[in-house]
Length: 402
Ligand code: SF4
Image (tube, rainbow, N blue to C red; front, side, top):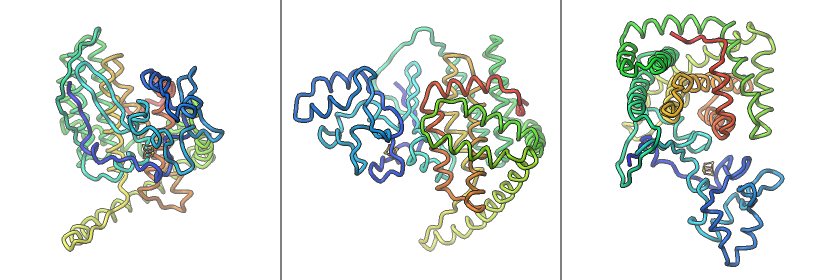
């Protein structure tokens, strides 16, 4: 069995009671059957508390009025862990924030950015993310599984990473090129021309396509009417999702009022001002980076805080690594890149709102918070993910097809 991880995977450590927004509150924790059987057989002094804290019919842990897990103590540590040890935890609690995608003979493991610490690891990282694979014992065979399609999807993902991590190109261009790769690949696969996909990857690796994407991205960036419509549509999609946290609705309301109350013109003014600010930060960041080198030589490390190009690259790579190859099960290739691009676009808009509220400033902490809150609402509900994907498939403002 081949296990693949992002290179920062081993740096993750749960900070438990020091966590700013524990994963043990605010959503239902589903308990696997094996753990339920173990809990049922527990016969020690902890039996009473354990049995009373599980909703056996729904197979979840009970919660209090504030949606805190019944095992979560005042000090934000787990009472079951304290009394029965780490081995007592159910699969959800043991794994989170690890997210596993399963393919024949392959497990792809990411760290869900719905966890603030995992989001922090991704956001603070400056170098392009790489992925490592290790072979461990175990084999398996799936029925109705197309290994050729998986292999081509894995090649496509390599091509997408190459494009998305090409820092010589503006991020908008990289996103457009990625969408182009996925769009063309899906058409080839749907037409039974799987082996033509290699030619698609080669096409998008060429400089001429970089140029075409640049022109299109620039045109789109300046077309505030289209951007306004697209953004409204995305927030409309988010509104239709099942609400996991009550305060998320408040965040959406606030974002919509601040961004859309004055129509496309008002939206455009905010975007232009935020874009200017972002450019200035990036410029001063690269000047600081020169200084950082000097300071590092002297043993004094100074981190630069803000670079949207890098944040958005890491986010795109995260979404593509996590979901792209899942197309082996449904052939829906394009929508996985659409979802990544739409998520980055929504996160940008939410950051613009945060920037306005912060009197025109932002730092990496703001980015982390916006990212993990967005991810919690979207990624932690299969229903939400499926609904968002369906909306994207029908999306009217297809601004990005090359
Ligand atoms: S959200 Fe992440 S850091 Fe916080 S308690 Fe859960 S796993 Fe630990």
